[in-house]
Image (tube, rainbow, N blue to C red):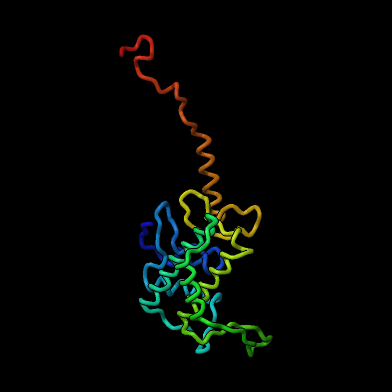
Length: 213
């Protein structure tokens, strides 16, 4: 798929699980597929926007991502997108995809810890570096999505021109967003208003009496 540079600030934020949110950083605007993680700054912005979904590290804080860190996240996005596409089609992940997810999950172990806040809360902590913890979070999110009971709920949005995924969390949900639903309804409306020309209207001039051939 050919993509044009996009921006993390225009990436759709649908409130989906972390793995789908990452895959959806490849999105479309007026028929043009764009990459919302085209630069290191875009990747950093996306990570910051999802900081509430990420495992904290024992060291605390979040280091700034380097160019190699950003590239690792983009590469994982490619794997996640392929795994989601396979799930939509009813296929299992490949052996290579399983190895990637398992390796990244193992590299970012985590445990639950009770915070010193009032009231107390349970927090997830990891001894890994921030980027290893992030990659592990995304890998585990992907694993949860493509196994039961959620596997059968993954959808590719059927709206014209859309390339996003979503979890069908309601029986009546058909689209990734209300905007896509509206566009699909408008497309159907115009398709009904402009019916195809009947075949017998498309004739050669010789078929009409009195008209020279």
